[in-house]
Every structure is written in C-alpha cells, then in structure tokens.
Image (cartoon, rainbow, N blue to C red):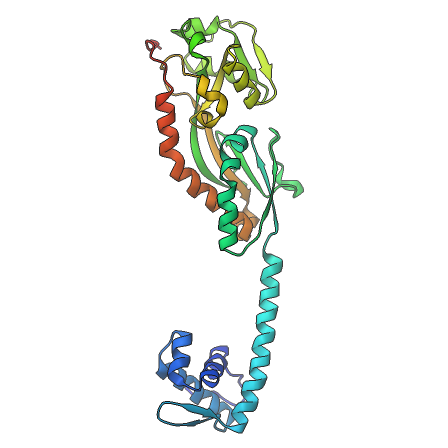
Length: 320
C-alpha cells in the first residue's frame, strides 16, 4: 500500500534504499539485509511514491542513483552514521566495567579463582571488558546498599526477593586424617573426638548430630576458626574432625590429607546459589557472569561427585 505524503518513510524503507544505493544493486542489497530482492524493490518503489520522483535509473542487473537519489543517499548516510554512533555510545555506557561479587572464602579460593581466566576469555570474545571485585567476607551480602552486584552463597532457602539460580547441592560430612579416622567407627566415637568448628557455621555440629536424632550426645570442647579454609588446615594437621561441605571441599589442597571416617546418611548443607537483584536481570555483566557460573559448575558436577566417592574411608558403616 503506497505511503501518503504526510507519513514519514519507514526505517526499513530507508535502509533498503541506502543498501541498494551503496551496492548499486537490488540483489546485493537484499543479500546484505537478509530479505528477497522483491522486498527491496517494493521498499524502493514505496520511497519513490512518497517522494514523487525516481531515486534510481534501472538497468537489467544494476541501478544508478539519479541526482535526487545521490543527494538523498548522502544525507541519509550521514543520518545513519549519527544513529550508529548514538546507539554504540549508549551500549558502551550500558556495559558494566566493574562487577562486584560477594563469595564465600572456600568457594572463592578452591573453585572460582582457578576458573576466572575462563570468564576473562569469555569477556574478551564478547568484547566486553569486565573487572571483577571479590569480597570474601562470610557476612551475607546486603543488596540494598548497592555495594554488591552478585552473591554466591550457601543457603537452604534463597531469598524470594532476589533472582536465585542453584549451582550445586551440598552435604555436611565429617572430615579428618586417616590416622584420626582409625579411632572413629561411629557417632559415639565422633562425639569423643576433638571437633573443629568454623564461626561461619557455629551450630553446624549440633545440627548435624540432631539430624541423626542424637541430641543426647555430649561432645568434647573443640577448636574454633573464623574461616572454613583455616578449619580445613587444622583438620589436615590432625587436630581433630571438622564438618566439610561435600563435594566442593575436595578441591581444597588440604583435603588431600582428609577422609570421611565412616559412611552415614546424607545430611544436607544447603546448596550454592548465585543471586542478584531482579532489577539487574538485564545487566549484561551480571547476566554473563551468572550464566557462566551455571555452565561451569554444571560441567564440573561429575568430577566433583567422583572426588566425593573416592574420599570414603574403608571403615564399617554406622547403624544410624
């Protein structure tokens, strides 16, 4: 349907004209735009109808600009260049140059840092440079103060106010050296051992024993550390038994000296989630990082599961 003289030509019509003018070919313009030659011809005809004059002289396989067409092509080319500059500038401003990540110390040291190079390579391929600032404090990230963009947290139930994507299910398992494990065949033996605590989970052991229904057990006074990596080092030094989060713990260097002293039921320790504000769902850096995390840890799940199976100490199972 021809356009009325009071209407402005559609953007697609102007694009079709400039492509045909640049190539001096309807067919080549169609190839550039991914449409049929008939569609480009229709757009050019509509433009000429709106102007009221020809913009091309036509030959069998070529079109040439009329004087009016040359003027229109020159002016539209300048206009399109201005549009491209404006949109590119807006995109550059929208791309995040810094991503602030809150992640727990163990996850950061044993899993995230060794893989950050892969994320950097992804950013390079996407031509999206992103600098990452990582906060490894145990305190829950406060999204209300705008000091964090993404949090990686171990929780049982993620906040309904955030976008939360599960990364890895976790289980709480006792860990100690093989020498210590020789003295631990059941829960009662474990209660008499030196228990290592981490301040990030001060009630971890109590809840673990409660999961077995053993609220009657009185445990020995143990050791307490402010981070899980420090507790792991203490367990690896033979100082006692700690609760580790299986299977991620097996990537920690200290875990090479540790085993699970006996088989028991699986006690959930929650799961790792990557979380961010709902309002940030369209932010390029946030989306790229979260998507990358989900893909990476999904591809790594089988390896982690194998490490977990290989860490079982060959001792009798407990009866609980």
